[in-house]
Every structure is written in structure tokens, then in C-alpha cells.
Amino acid sequence: MLLLISPDSVEEALECAKAAQHLDIVDVKRPEEGSLGANFPWVIKDIRGVVPADKPVSATVGDVPYKPGTVAQAALGAVVSGATYIKVGLYGCTTPAQGAEVMRGVVRAVKDHRPDAFVVASGYADAHRIGCVNPLALPDIAQRSGADAAMLDTAIKDGTRLFDHVPVEVCAEFVRRAHEAGLLAALAGSVKVGDLGALTRIGTDIVGVRGAVCEGGDRNAGRIQPQLVAAFRAEMDRHAREHAAAVVAAG
Image (cartoon, rainbow, N blue to C red; front, side):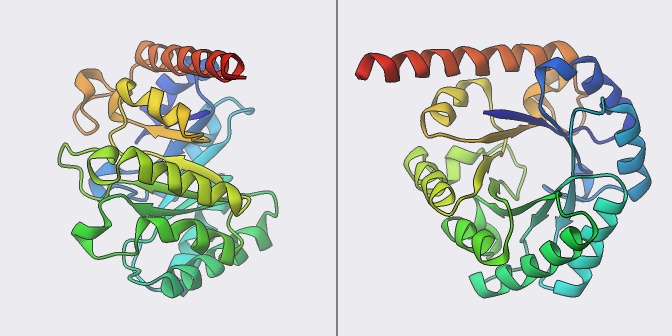
């Protein structure tokens, strides 16, 4: 399981760089603009400059409306700025067809510029609260559009978490559908250390966190702490070892 950490500034990215051995992807976002709020192009560029070259930089394009051309331009801006993982929050898409249309534009814009870029179709575990596309439709949307991964996060950051809205068994179905479609499955949404056992068991490929590695567990007021990143990674590795041992023991 890969660990994605989301700094919101160059200063926080420098803290991530101190813990580079413990993380896999640095994800640029701007929490004050939403769950998948987009940051400025120059911030993406500056963060790419301070993160070790072997660590990919991801960038959120935003909690986007159903405006395929607008979103495609935003995605191109992110990849031109130095991101190689491009995440799109399908906030304004109410049907799978709308989601696929937006993502097809993103995939073309991004991969025409950089074929090896990695595109993530992101939805929301609490979709019922904002009226967007059903979480379990995301793997199909991603596959139909040529994206590389499907992701779930939470749209409303009010203290509720991924598993509060999508139970573990439904997340497992999300992961299964993603894998059947040849995609990676990413899960986020106020994920805590206590969730790692379940995330490991269901085969999650990428786990995204911010609050869990910020001082006080506060994604907005807290700052990312290298020692918290290291501790989170240690727990991830422990669960991975235990799960592998259990699989071997089961036969």
C-alpha cells in the first residue's frame, strides 16, 4: 500500500521531504478550497522543486463542476506545473455519463502532454450529502475514460470519516471493482491509524492522509509533522506484515 501525504504549502512540503523515506507520493492541495481543493500552479512547481526527485508529486484539480473543457484545462495546468499524478474530484457530476465525459477530457489533455502521467478519477464517500455520482460508479467511470485509478474521499470535512459513509464491505467492493477494471484503488477521508487494518485487508493500493499526520490531528490548523508521517508508515508496514503472515497461515 502506497502512502500519499497532502501538504498545502512549500513549507509543509519541506517537512514531507524530511520524512521522504516514509512516504510514496506528495499530493498538493489547498484545503480551504475544499476536500480536493486545487492549489496554485506556482505552488505545485515550487513543491516539485523541494520534494526528492524520486517521489512523484500529485495535484488535485479541485472539487470540479460538470464543465469538461474547464476541467481539462485545469488538469493540463497541473501537469505542466510539474505534477505527474492528476486527481479530479467529480463533485458536480450527478451521473456516470457526466463523470466519464469530464474524465475523458482530462485524460486526453494530460496524456497528450505527458503520456506517463497518472490520472485519478475521484469521488466522494458522502456523495449522498452533495448529490454527486454514486461511489461505486467510480471504477467504471475511470475505466471508460482511460484513467489509471479510482479514488474515494469525503467531500464535507466535518469530523466524519470514510467508513462512516461507506462501510468496510462497500469499500471492499469498490476496491474489487477497481482491480477488475485494471485500475489502482485509492481511499482517503479522515483516515486514522485505526483504519489501517481494514484498508490492508481489502487490498487498498493507495491511502491518502493529511489530518492523521498533522499536529493535533487537525487538517486545517495543524501542520504536517515528519515524526507523525514516520509513525503512520510504521503502522502501515506492521499491518502489511501481519496480513501477509495471516494469508500464508491460511494456506
